[in-house]
Length: 202
Image 1 (cartoon, one colour):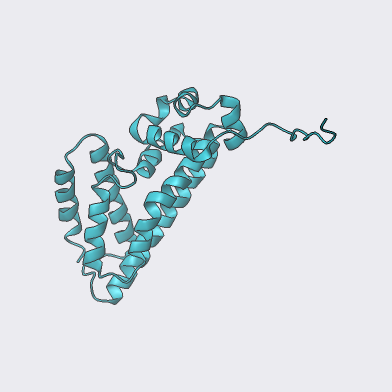
Image 2 (cartoon, one colour; image 1 turned 30 degrees about the vertical axis):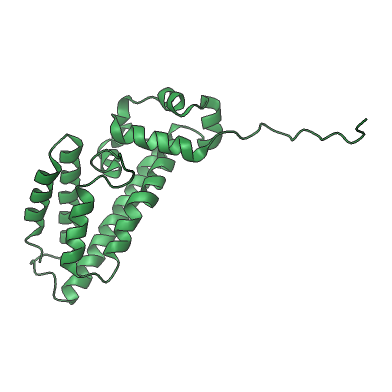
């Protein structure tokens, strides 16, 4: 007879696979209309209960913010690191165009940028997700601005525009490219458009 039975642990066992839920949610938000995709559908696709998802992410806003942070880590951060390196301006610009016109996260990633998609769907985002979008937008513009400043100092950036304006210009071109790709435009056509729009920079 066992005189020392194992006591059951207190609280509910944690069975939710956070990474799996984030992968499913990111893929769903990326491929579909964010405004019409329900949380119930995310739960169904990821095989978790709504209460379980709420315990992990608090609410839909918390899930979306977590998805955006994951996207930043997997997709956007490597681009920022590339722009922060000492690569020649033209080489970095070519790499930026290549990134912007290819599926850039998983093998079967949708075309276009999830961050740009969320930025364009602000009315459907919660407060925490909107704040994260604003933060990433600010970080992106700052990265572009510092990149242009370094390139100007190295004599590689020849356009007559301030780093601040150049950062806004670069961001606008990438946003437009992402929107074109998301609406089914041929990637090679979008690549040519970007190369033409960036040809004036240096």
